[in-house]
Amino acid sequence: MARRAGRITLALPRASDLAALAVALFGATAAAAEPPGRVVSINLCTDQLTMLLAAPGQLISVSHIAADPLASVMADRAGQYHLNHGQAEEIHAMAPDLVVTGPYTARYTVDLLRRLGIEVRELPVAQRLADIPDNIARMGDWLGREAQADRLITDFEDGLAALAPDAQAGADARPTAVLHYANNYTAGTGTLAHEILTHAGFANLAERAGVSSGGTLPMEQLVMLMPDAVISGQRYPGQTRAEAVLDHPAIAALRDTHSSAAVSDAEWVCGTPAVLSAIARVRALHGAGG
Image (cartoon, rainbow, N blue to C red; front, side, top):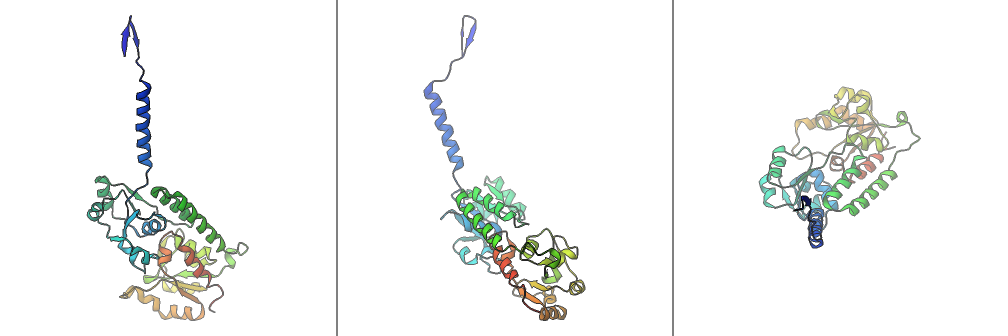
């Protein structure tokens, strides 16, 4: 800025200076847009979506639960990655560009990683089938794999449409089913399991019993509801007393005269395309049994 004859004049930057500034800004923007090169997942559901979407070499670690075939539909693939136990110290030592997790991961771990300057992103829990494409798109954006996410969403939505229940069959005309787990636990409205069950063409008796979200359904009430199908999860090694209800004579009698199935829990746990297999298994119960 210069003063001439009582007036103030501004010295404009030179063209070369403007060009240099533009280059610097463009470089900073490009660097910010670069996808993360080292990604670590510390949650079962983000494990599976990152394994489906990440570029070769981009994902360096998944949680150890991803390698458990009773909990993970991608246990075989998980063995290709370093398995972590979700501890802040071990994650920091991997020098990740991005850590992905879910909302129920230990807050201490998430908060400490962020204080250490590591970017952590949390994927919402899928409580509806409609949440699954949203989460796939969100993960694709985080990883810089939007095109791959779009293809996965298209495949999922096509598969879901192919498994849609008969639109002409009213809710009252549908066969009934109940999800029965250890300790008489069941899943009602507001859960992904409920949506899997209803998309497969069944009416969820937990809804009729007034169970919202997850809760217990007393054995006496379950028997009086007389479901057309009883769906249980896989047994875990080292049976607990809570699992004894699965072998109760009343449940055995229902299974003898009605449809029953043990559906892999791994297909129901996370909002991934694996739910299509769960829907198909439940649909296969139509017309089975007594």
